[in-house]
Length: 139
Image (cartoon, rainbow, N blue to C red; front, side, top):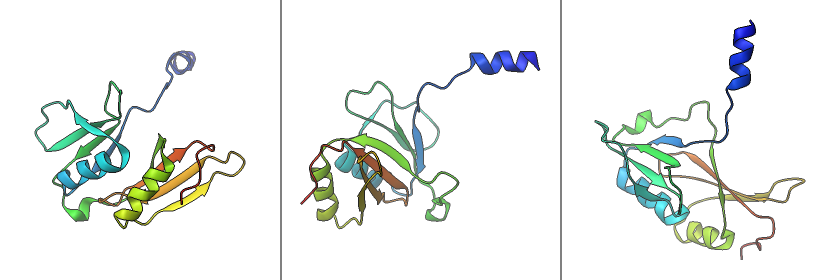
């Protein structure tokens, strides 16, 4: 057991690397995340299946991987409930959702007052964006 404890002490997690979602429409998914979250497609290894790696502004690694051309029936929620991002521009983001007719839920995190915005992507993945409590409430 000593060797296992030594390995456990040496191994740590320092950050979340990326999320992967499945899509039946790559173009619509890339457009959705680009338009609403500002993510842009970037370098991706030459996998034998279609997809995209999406990057946040200034990021050196992709934070969202998209695996495409999956049948709609395979786009089912598993044990992961949602993907959460940190964002800024709450009012602009809510305005974009309204213009596109995308339903959303907005509230404040109890005891922290962080704004939490929830909505679904075109594939049925639940998205959360957390905004600084100092951001003004959207109109």
